[in-house]
Structures are given as structure tokens and as C-alpha cells.
Amino acid sequence: MMKIRLAISSLLLATAVAVTGGLSAQAQEKKQLAFVVNGASDFWKLAEAGVKKAQTELPNYELSLKYPEQAAAAVQQRLMDDLVAAGVSAIMVSAVDPKSSTGALNRIGGQVPLFTTDSDAPDTNRIAYIGSSNTAAGKQAGEIALKALPDGGKCIGFVGLPGADNARERIEGMKSAIAGSKVELVDIRGDDIDMTRAKRNVEDALAANPDITCMVGFYSYNPPRIYEVLKEAGKLGQITVIAFDEDPITLGGVREGSIAGTVVQQPYEWGYQGMKLMAKYLEGDKSVIPADKLIIVPTAIIDKANVDAFEAELKSRINGG
Image 1 (cartoon, rainbow, N blue to C red):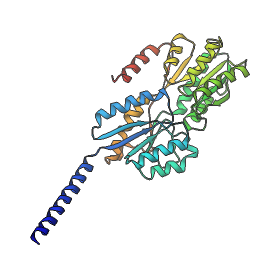
Image 2 (image 1 turned 30 degrees about the vertical axis):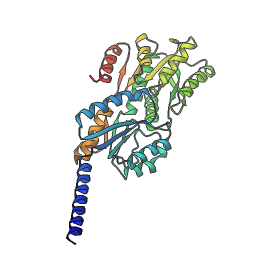
Image 3 (image 1 turned 120 degrees about the vertical axis):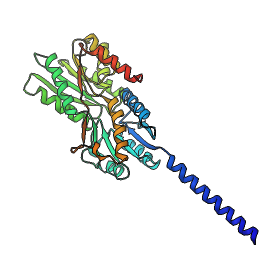
Image 4 (image 1 turned 90 degrees about the vertical axis):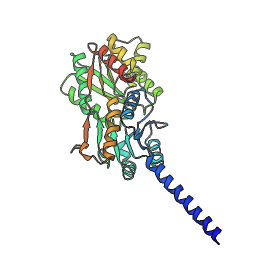
């Protein structure tokens, strides 16, 4: 009988140690913060660099940047569901289609703190938006157009996701800047972040509109596709190109003068500041969230005069400088 009691006592003690050890291990597990982008694009390399920088300052967290398999709202939502199921503590997302995804985003935001970047979803329960003012960026594109086309001209715009807030606001911003001038934005063509379709859109627009004098690339990969098509058609330098973001082809075009200018954002800061923002929020510091829930990271115009200095700074950040 004594032996049985000792055996039971030993078993209970071992179980208690195992449970305590498990709880201790759980307590030591790092909280996970995820940045979910809207599709595969080199544009997000800078955001990755920002996330890596934040990781060095947030040793108690595990930070990651996630790409959906394709730029589709349903695919992106599945990715976020998987992250929540895996125990992620907070998510920052560039929503593929905020207008049609309100219910899905609210569902995610009801389970973990949800932040938005790049393309906002203001009608959801997201905690805050950190990123560009896309309307202001669109106005800067309009400024480039007015300067490059003093006698006016007809522009066609190319964009990935026409329904996304970042696209819509950039287009509206540009239209407001050129309103009343002789510069017109006569058409917008979407490609769903499909590189082949993006190039074909430019080819089709060029063939159908021989009188076009200006092309605008609203997403980072659109200006390079415009550049490629115009170069192949022998029309590089004959049609004014206005760009967004800092793809190497775009910056090369700005340097050589075949692209009038580009409006650049700061995805590095979205990644860096966004991760630190989520960490502070999880730690109970709600003072980091402004009353309007908008944290605007300024955009800038890059032209031939400042492209070299900008590119040097860009390389330094990507290389961890």
C-alpha cells in the first residue's frame, strides 16, 4: 500500500513539474507580429528591410512579412485566418480590396488587433492606418504632369487594383491637381497585379490611342512596364511618363530623362514604425494611436535633380545602413 502511495505521489509530482515547465515555456514564447502585403512585388523589399530593423529593437517579438499566393482578397483573407489560427498577436495588412472585404477584415480584427497600411480600410474595426496619404501622392503626380506638359496632353493611367483605396485616392488626387488645366487623365486600366497583363495593357493602350501624350504608372511595377513597351516601340522620350515608387527601372528612367518624375513612398518606415506601433499597442500603450487613427508617412517627388541622392539612401537602407 505504501509503495502504491509513493508511486502515485511521484506521478503527481512529475505531472506538476511537466505542467509548470509547459507554462514556463509558453510564457517565454515570443509574441508574433505579421505584416501581410497585397501581392508579390519588389516594392515590398524596403518594407522587409524595415521589419528586419524593427526586429533588432524588439527582441521579445517574432516579426514576419507575409506574401499571399496571389493578389486576391480571398487568398489574402485565408492567409490572415491561418496566421490567427497559428497564434499571431497582431496583424498589419495592405488590404487587396477593402471595400468588398469589410466583413472579413472585421472578423480578423475581432480576434487580434488589426492595423492597415498602404491601402486603408477605414470602415472596418482596424486600430489605425500607417502609410502614405494617397490623395496627397496623387496630387504630387499631378504636379509632375503639369510641369512636364505645359501645353497640356492626354494621359492614360495603369494600376494594379482599381478598387483599392490606395489606387482610387491616387487617381482622385491627380485629377484634382490637373483640374482646370489642359492635362487630362482620359482612361485607367487595371491588371490585378499580373505582370504580363500589366505590360499588355500598355501595349493595347498604345495601339488604340496613337494620339496619347502621357502615361501614368500608379503602382510600383507599372512604370517599368510602361518603360519596356515604349522602348520596344521606339517611343521612349516621345511620351511623357509619370511614375510612382522606386523600382530600379523607374529610377533609371528618371535619371536618363525618359521618365519625368516619380512619387515615392516610404515602405521601409511602414515596416519599421508599423511593427513598433503594434508592439507598443500590445504592451498597453494606447497613446501611440492618434485621435483620427491616421499615421501619415510623407511622400516625395523624385526627379533628375535628386534621383542620385535618393537612390544612395535607398541602397543604404536595403543593405541595413
